Length: 134
Image (cartoon, rainbow, N blue to C red; front, side, top):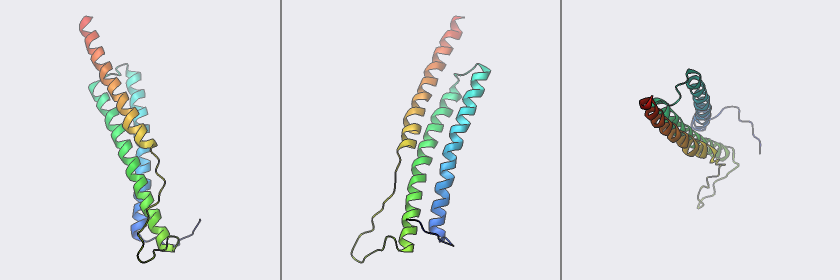
């Protein structure tokens, strides 16, 4: 269904705005992480304690922003559908929350980037051990 709403109510508009902002935050986190890794690779000091923490924090931010953004988007769209009458509420029935939920941000942020952070921490320890041998 497609609907044109000339003026959005403030509640759903805020939910949809924050959902869009959090989606952009997730994209910016990935871009910043790629830039940081390219910079560290260029400087030839890839395994530092800060790089492991930054990769782990980026994974957490990506997972949280992706999940919260999807929830806010679903709430905003459901509220708009209720306002225009697409989900008419019948007395005595409960409201059904329907939204598409993609677990990609959780998988990418929560698992993959945290594993990469663990690899960075392991690499930092190996680098520290080899510096003591030389």
